[in-house]
Image (cartoon, rainbow, N blue to C red; front, top):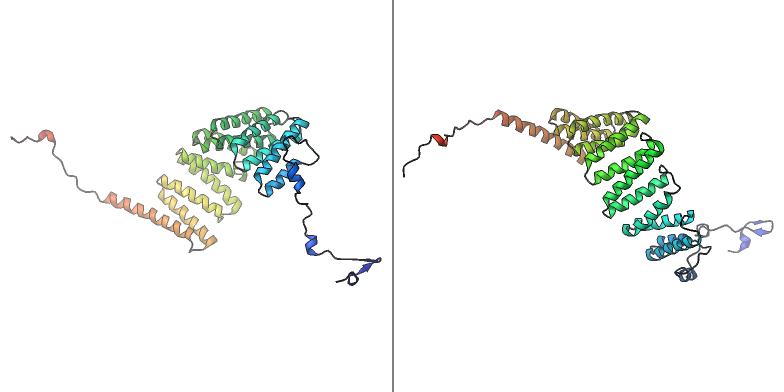
Length: 339
């Protein structure tokens, strides 16, 4: 097709942009010059951003090449800008996340430690950047088996934040929550329990006792109460959570049904089977309205109720049937036979 077939404006033929040209990627491909010249260990820092090139290599799955560029970028910026320069710290963070995302926690550990040390100089302990760095280093410690160091790191963060904003400020909740989760992962539920109760008190003071913001903490408390066998506390907390969920999602919400099942399971453990059966049947009605009557969820819950009733029948029959006692003569009254 010639240009004469296109409309002409001011003597210039207007050629429409085809879809292939319109969606063509404008970013130039990596050249052989870049590949050949960006791997020299003594290469000085140039105007090209090695970190961006490393990210492009990483997108292509070239992790080894990306790692060499990240390390070269860090060395170059430390030499030219200094260890405390913001650009150097940003490159240090990129290298740290590179190792963490690949699951190479042992290699990431020294770089994240340097990153936290650098940010401790001029960053507030309640700043999200600082707390994220602490959380990242604590997670690395846990992955490498240094759980005590992770606990100590979270405790230090709690202390620093308390000194900065006070012990009852909502900004302290993040550090308290992370420390409690660290204890729970190690099975130390009695250590986590006062932390969750403290978090709940702070949330109640800020939002109210039946605010939806307290729902996650209530869920964690239920889990901890069950682990330490404080079933009455767990049932009380679940009833409070049920009130919140009914106010938010209505009496027929699926989250309400899930809460009903948890509360019913606890009532079964407390031998309150009549109340548990009532909660099970209410949860079944909610699931029937949501999914239908002939679903696996409804069927399994009905079997659970049947087993509960069967257990009650078995216990009643065992109590009604008492076999006669057979008296056994005492050995002291038995006269031995002569041999």
